[in-house]
Image 1 (cartoon, rainbow, N blue to C red):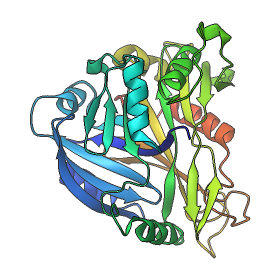
Image 2: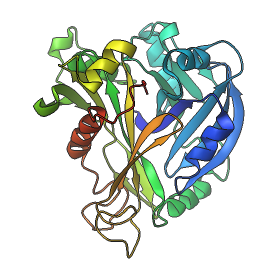
Image 3: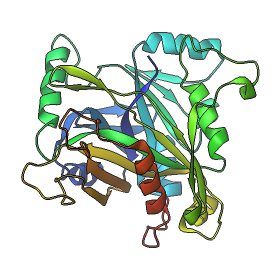
Length: 328
């Protein structure tokens, strides 16, 4: 099974304040606190439906402090779960790909020679949540899934949008990095089938690539498949808001989309109601919250999420005149 998008890692100057901001979103609950040597930072982990948000504050010079100095608060890394984390590490060793291991996580960082589009990557062992690891992990997972079904609660991180210099090239590079054990390695990149879908938004002078990653969401004891895409955006206009941020800050995360369970009795378009979409700034992260079940079927997490529509919304948001000029 390929890696599944399941978390974001956020750098913050004031971790307590950042955690308090995240807790304003329904369903976000702290589950663990620890220190991560790789980031040289203290960490608070919050469960956000089926996903997690790791909030960091530096306690020594290192990657977290460097990110804050250059970009300010915001997304430092995106994370994926892996069924066979040991096998994935062996595959990285076979490819002579540098990485760091700490506990149940593997870190792919630029200072280990990883060629990434302006973002670090964290790989976690599947089903390993800080508060539910061990003998009761399955029962805890079921309870979390039921809780995320509460009306208005965030159900999962659905997608991440990145600004990059060359979207197709970065999409192929990221796909090869995440291919994992057993994936075929073509002799030439051109021999591989494109792992991404082209995205065009000429009205915003943006081209992009939608890299789809699988997502297995546990809902009421059933496992449903749903895409968790990574959008890579390239601006053709250096004068546009996205173009100016790319020139000034380089590649990085623009926004994160999460889905939420609709609230019974809310009207169409109202936050928590059918087909709603809300955008907010959470501790330096631009977060879009959308209706998990846009088609109104109530069939389960992710059924109504439309990756193509989400990509166009993320592109429009990145070029909105009111967007903060600060890098994410």
